[in-house]
Every structure is written in structure tokens, then in C-alpha cells.
Figure 1 (cartoon, one colour):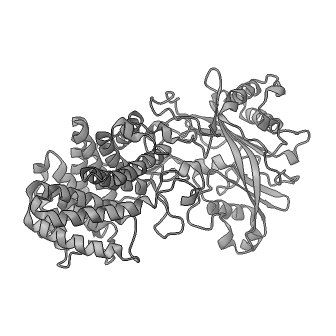
Figure 2 (figure 1 turned 180 degrees about the horizontal axis):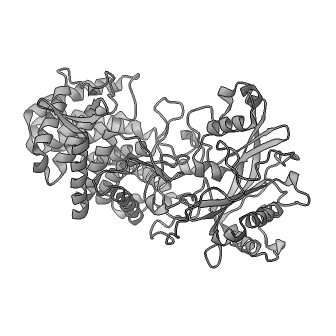
Figure 3 (figure 1 turned 90 degrees about the vertical axis):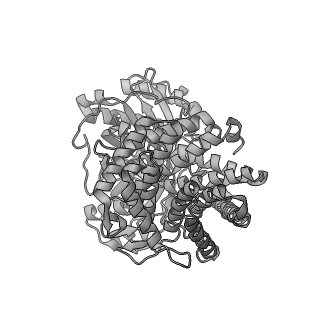
Length: 635
């Protein structure tokens, strides 16, 4: 295995029980100023040159971790070290080292050691041992509370040419996707002043370089031109998490504060664990009132004050699908409370039309998904009047040419990549049950309209694909033999757009892949489709499992194989993004609130409800349909 690639234990439970959460204010030995000066090692004073021009010749691997753990255990206990037993990386020429001392996710203190500022530091081990010693001394009696050490051994410095325009130089990543966050740290030097932020700190605090440089500029009282004239470097690091509370002490090699999930770990039992954790996260975030928390921020432990009715009702639908598939009556009862809450807070009527209100806006997608949730729940009769009014609203927003208005109120914009597909999925769900010819008439017109619209090169967008695949497949299954031509057209279009969607998935360097934890996500660097996102990969997974079923139903073995591989790779991405244990939650207080949630991306740890519900809905189908063998040979 490569460094950071240890198995995440997908077949088992959490690796440990969570320690009591300590309520702490401030950081020992640390000063926080505008998000800038987080440790005493980020010095304002004179600084000798850091060995920033060198690169490590060796990297730590998983096989080195027992020796690393044994050496650090002795250093923590103040015992002598046999340096001959150290891995080669620790005997490299010393470079800057960062050590954070943590308890239950809370950072108690942190130290930077810069070899150029310290006499007698020849090796990386010398710098690491000094950082540990200083960290203990700074904590004093509190050092007994430390159960984790977060360590970055810096290497591979790159000097950046930012020029003098501050507005364009504050981030190494010129594009909107900060894909290096958590892999590369940042070093800023101006005269005798130095600031450094380690990759693991960048990840844990979930802050952009722009925010950090703005804070630094204010703290150093510099003009924008002075900031632009500073020396900027990025650097990589060997990232290690040391579990001091285990006997013997354990060390884990990390990549971007996590461990890499290998495609071979994606099997039916591990996929079931993935789905169960996602369901548990959703269930645990439904409050007694029925309110589902929309977004949690692990870095701060706080809930976002934003909300979105489309995503809320999608999560409701996901829990209904899980409960129906697993015969989970407790979850179905919880969904009833959630629907009641959402109706009480966001539903109203205007004449005969039902509204789902989001401030001043009434969105077609929110109306359709709310109606689908009520329709799909076993107690639909309880909300019969609201369901009928919402269905009338969907009909009201439909136009004779087959298009839809995206909003009833609050906006004139059109979101045709999203909302019409959601409405068509609702119609297909209803048609499958009642075979209403009026729904079929309207659906047929809409299918023709949006097929033409999407295939225009100016309109093509992956977001369109999964909603229409799901809707078309559901309708396709419900049609009789007398609709053979429409069935042929639906299947052909589904395959056309599914084939195109698979081409947006990243798996190797030819797909624009940069780092191994990105594998399996859907993103095209050169396109303007938007940034990578857990919810995007999740909804594509929802669409592709229906495309796989359609290929199976029509005995199209090549497409069935193509979609199967894409689905398993997407599950790998979801596993990579899920918070699982005390390794990827090393910086999170009250980690039990976040277990099972999916990060937005590899570099952004915020958990939004649709990050979880989209993949859950697709994976529930996969678990029902895929044999064990269909999870294999997807690498």
C-alpha cells in the first residue's frame, strides 16, 4: 500500500468508543488573531532560512507506522530513542515539523519547529522530538488529557509567483476548485516574519487560503501590494495521526487527513455498512419536532443557518425509500413526523394550488418532491388534500409545448437541468400506479421537448441526466405493448445520456485526476458544470442504477457492464467521503454527531443533507439488485 492507504475497516463497527468531550476555551500556548496566528511556531520574530528548497527522498508508508508509533511513544514518555530503528524518512535532513496535541477532537495546543531557527537539529526526528517536548511543556498538567497527536512532516516546497495584484494571488488554485487543500500547506514570509499552515490544519479548519491571507494582511498591517510582494510557498507533508490512548500506541499514515479507500474494499457487505451509516446519519439528524438539520459543519461543530426545500424533501424521499426497502417501520414513523413538520412550516395554499414556500420562492422541484414524498408514504391519505393541491401546482407550471416554468413565485429564472426532471419523476411515479392518460400525454410532450433541449450542445449538463433517466425508466416499465415506439425512444435516450454521463467520471490521470482520493467522483475540469460535490456523484449514482436495470432488461450486456463499473467506482468515492472513525474525525469534537455523514468533497468537510440522501437512494437499489460478484473487477 501507499502512504495513507490503510484500510478503513468497512466491514466492521467504529474502531473505538468516543471519549468524553472536553469543553475548552482557547488554545494553550496559542494565540488566534483573525484566523492567522494559531500556534506559537507561527512567529513574528527573526527567522533563519527554512530548508524549503529540498525534497524528501523517502516517504513514510503504512509499514513504517509501528516503528513511528514506538518512537513517538518513547518520546512522549521522555524515554531515550534508538535512532537506528527509525524509518529512513525520520532520518532525512530536518525540515519544518507541525504537531497538534488533541483530546476528543479539540486542539489543546500546537507547535511548529523550524530547523533554521534551532541549533543542533540535523534530522526530521530531531525536529519532531523537539516539537513534542515543547508541546508537552506548554500544556503542563493538561498534557495528561492528550489522546492524539496530529503530525505534519513537511517536504516538497514550491515557490509561487503571485505577482503584485492581491485579488488574484491569495490562492494557489486559480480555478474555483481548491483541490490541493489538505494535501499542500501554505508558507508566507515577508522579511523576518513567517506564517505557516499545515495541510492537516487547512483541512481541519476548512478555510480557504484567501481567508488566511486576508487575516494575515490585517494582522501584519500590510497593504495589498505588500502582501503580493511576500514570498509564497506551498509544501506537502507526511501526515500522521498518533493514538496515544491505545496500548501499544498506534500511528496511522494519512492522506489528506484520511485513509484511501481501495476499490477492492467495495463489496456488498461494505456497501451495506456505507448505506446503513448514511441512513443513521439522516435519522439522527431528525429532531423530535420532525425538523431535519440541513447542514452541519464539523470544523466548528455548528449547524448552518441556511436551508433548501428541494434538498429537504429529497431527504424525506430517501428515508421513505430506505424504510420501504428494509421494512423499517420506526424510520417510516419518523418520516411521518418529518412530513408533518415540513407541511406546518413550509406549505400553504393559494386558491386550489399547493405551495412549498422557501422565503418568497415557490420552486417546481420542491413542489414535485414534496408531492412524491406524500404519495410514496403508506399514510398518504393523511395528506390527501395537500397532495392533490401540490399535484395541481405541478400541472399549473406545465406548458403546452412540453416545457415547465421553474418557479411559481419569486423568480423568472429557469432551472431546466433540475426541476423539470424532478416533476417528470413525480408524474412517472403516479402514472405507474394509476395509468392516467392525461399524465402520459403531457409526459410525452415534455420528453420530446427536453430531449431536444438537452441535446443542444449549448445546454448539455450532467445535472440533467439522472432525473430524466429515473423518470424515463419508471415510465418505460409502466407502459404497455401498445406504446412500443415511445418505449424505444425512452430507452434510446436513456442510454445516450447515460453513456455521456459515464464519460464525466474521473478514474485516472486521463480524466484529470490529480489525487487518489478523488477516484470515482464525477467532474470535468475543463467544463463549466460546477465543482465536484458528494451530492452530484450521489445523484448520478441514482440515475446510473436505473440505466443499469434498463440495460439488463434489454439484454444489453456491454452497457450493463459499463454502468456496473461506473456504479462501483462511485460507491468507492462515497466511502472515501463518509466520516467513519476516529482517524478522519481526528479534529472533530462530539464526533458521534457526524459519523455516517458525507463530506461535500475531499477538501470540504461540510455535511449537507443531500450529500447523504442522493447516494443512499441509489445504493439501496444497488444492494437489492447487485450480486456479490457485480462489485468485483471495477478497478
